[in-house]
Amino acid sequence: MPVKVMIPSPLRPYAGKRDSAEFNARTVGEALGHLTTEFGDLRKHLFTEDGKLRSFVNVYVNDEDIRYLAKENTPTKDGDTISIIPSIAGGVPTMELAS
Amino acid sequence: MADATALWISGHLAEKIRAHGAETYPHECCGALLGRDLSSVAGSDRGSGAEAPAREILQLFPLVNRRDDSPRNRFSVTPEDVLAAEKAAREQGLEVVGWYHSHPDHPARPSLYDRDHAWPWYSYIIVSIQNGAPQDMTSWRLNDDRAEFSPEEIEIRHRAAV
Ligand SMILES: [Zn+2]
Image (cartoon, rainbow over all chains, first blue to last red; front, top):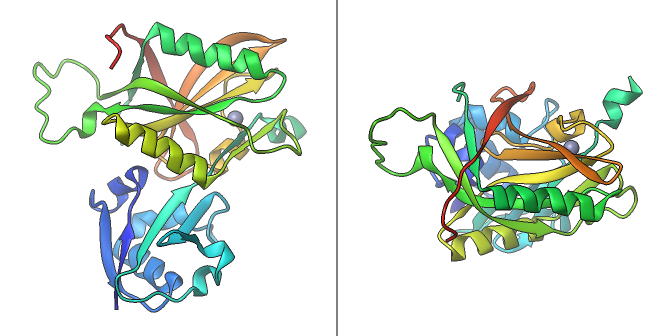
C-alpha cells in the first residue's frame, strides 16, 4: 500500500533533495520509520533521542492532524499523503538566565 | 551546509520587523520571511561567483502569537499559520525561507528553547527590543547536528518590490 510522504523544504537537504518519497506502510509510524531509515540524517530533526516526535513537528494524513487520530498508530491506506509541518515556537533566553 | 550564509533584506522590510517588535512589546512578535533561496535555484550558474551563497527576503507575513499563557517570553505559531504563510508565499512565486521573532528586554541571541524548536535551513531573525525600542537584529541558522545556531550575516540590499 504505497503512501506518499511530502518532505518540507528545510528537510530536503537530508533527503537527497527530494520533495516526496513513497513507501509501503500500514501506519503513519511505519511510513516515518521507512523515511528515516532511508534518509538517516532526517531522523534527529523529526524525533527526539528517545524516539518521540518532536513537539513542534506536526504530522498530517491527508488533511488530518494525527494528534487527533491515533497518533503514530494512525492507519494509512493506498494513496494517502503524509505531510510534515512545523509549528514555529520560540522564546527569550529564560533558560539561560535560570542557570 | 558549513558555508557562511548571508541574508539579503531591504531596509524597508528590516524596519518593518523592528516596528512589529516595538508594536507588540512587552510581548513577542513573530512572522514568516517570504523570499527566494538563491543557492537552491535550479541549475543556477551564479555568474562571476564572487558572492557568498545567499537568500533574499522579499516580503513579510506577520503572525499572531497564539500563546496566551506566557506571551511575554514565548510564542507559538500553529501549523495552520505555517500553512497560511506557505500558501501566501506560493501565490507570489516565493517560499517561506525563515521566521522572525522579537526578544523583549533580552539580547538578540537564540535561546535553548529556540534551538529545541528549530529546523536547519530556515533563517531565524531575532530582534532585541529594549524598553520598547528596537535594538540589535541578528539572523541564525541551526546547524545540521542541532547542537547550536550559526550566525548569518544580514545584508541590507535595495531592490524593487515584487
Ligand atoms: Zn527566541
